[in-house]
Image (tube, rainbow, N blue to C red; front, side, top):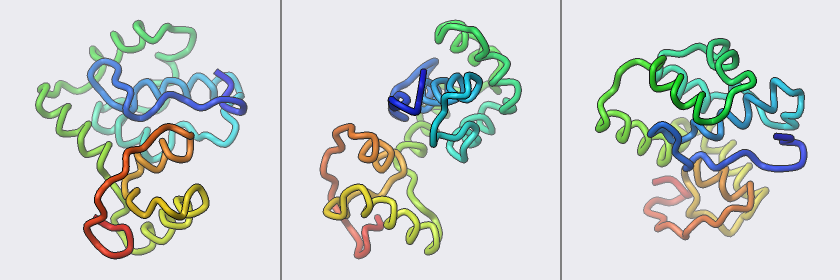
Length: 150
């Protein structure tokens, strides 16, 4: 995939039961091919998934090299630390709802969000910001605190 001219899959797309895995595969493949453009592998979101799974970025890159999504998903299931379905779903929810956790990160987040669409002050999670930036539809959310923080 050439990420200089297209977007990776959404963080919401599940593979092997995990959100972000399909996106991370796209970014890793592009990095291996030298076509990642502005995308970074491994970025902080990638590292969260890899840490949860107990897999290093290097192990993942080696597993991705020349493999299909299904082969990577099968490898990931076997290589990842064992987690119950409930633990994986809890982790998925955290990944999809997580927003900035410091005032400095909120300032950075708002700068990025406002550069894409300053009217979307309801966007408060990194997942929603990625989708908004990559032109995917993002439902309007209720804003429950001043400054766009939930």
